[in-house]
Length: 468
Image (cartoon, rainbow, N blue to C red):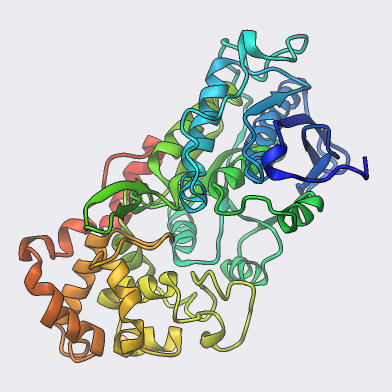
């Protein structure tokens, strides 16, 4: 097999070879291949082994494992996007195929756009009579899955930024038992998790080592729907630990993409960098888990009813994490003592988080967090124009809607401590006169939305907390 060479455009099939889980070690193996090439083995390690599972929970773990296998395959499939998909050691039904098609088509939207590909109608997961492995029981059946008697406890995803910290503190206030959970080896996330003072769970993920060589040999590369992939990992972990909630912190702004403009300024389409953080993905994935994996496992985003500005307002209420959090993607691998090491100050995430927090936080505190005033730096003009959707589209990053950025900037333009800063002054002089003043108020953007999967009893208490 050492003779096999990865030739992107010659590959005909992507294969889901098999998956396995060892309860004694807590290690899941997810195996893939292209054509007759070598096996690509990814490993997920869930701490807490050995796991003692009764029959019902063991069956649910197997269902979650297969779902994880199918979703995680996106990391490898994208290297060649071949025309055929084969699932070799189990079969899936039409509902599972529909969920996967939804995730792959939309979750690879930015990837396809950047690589000049059109994946719509091209991704076919074999199901039912199409399935090759018809001798194996399907991943799911039409019969509803049972409740497992999971205990009330939340695995809460932490990413090191402001959003997950708002969720963690809200759940703490509401008395919900929780374990702060993350995947991979980020020092910054580990330090943030430690700062919460709560129990932690750090799940390991090791990609198939050949993937890096394949990339060097000309694979397609680009953004994948990592949030739904991490969600599937955490669903498996929740079942192993016998807990009933997997909680993310995706706000409603995540559902809106970047409008793609033609040279003449007309809109040619929408691409959502953070589709798997959006409502459509949360709804589809969460409903599937309850119907086909475990009936009493709740998957939801605690912040779905909030805009990015509403989240920023909540975060500003405590300074407990000022020296620990970071939403900066570029400097995420660096953990430094000084704020400047946690914020590069030039990426879209830095730009947006600074702007979103500014209306709700004293200026010296905000400048102290970032180590500089981003709104008084003319070199940042182009970056902020993208956020404002002024002569540019919203960046392909997890940032708020253009109307949120415009409302925040308009609020700062009214405040003596901000209005003379270079970018705020330019907004007031050049951009604001072209906008509808009625659409620049922050207050309407802070209203809570009713579209979410938060359990009803929790939502009623959360709503009162967030309104305070």
